Image 1: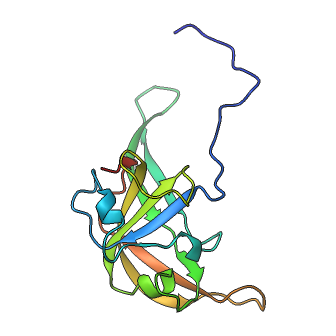
Image 2 (image 1 turned 90 degrees about the vertical axis):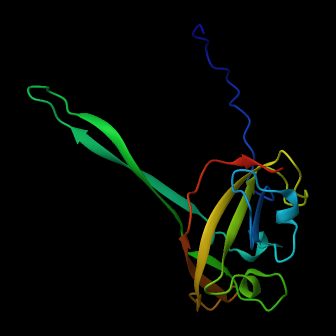
Image 3 (image 1 turned 135 degrees about the horizontal axis):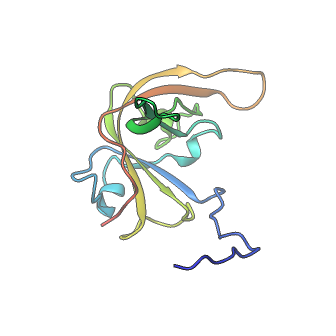
Length: 170
């Protein structure tokens, strides 16, 4: 394709506000083709609004290996393994049925399902892209207190399977 000057209008982007949904789902038969019925099934809960602003994030990095060659002035590089993690969860302390505090119990294995760029009020539907995050849940520990705001819970998770690219709901 020929070189074309960029427009002064940047490409459109989805705002994060109200456009992120996180479900906790007890079982998914095929992580490459999660079903709408699994997202809305027994034991599955929307937990998005339990999380604090700093309570949900996926982090990742990839190693680089030096490839030094005899007499070559600049070392080459190759890409290695990726290190992906679900950072420490942080959510409000609540006894409300369906809240993260009630649903995300220590030792429970299941799946977080994350949908981005679609309004939270929109129900799950076929063809929507989601990221499936297989995990086991750690202990629910008291979060930091600063004399203001809500009481919180912090919780570690361990990934129990590969974290892939978003896939379509079926």
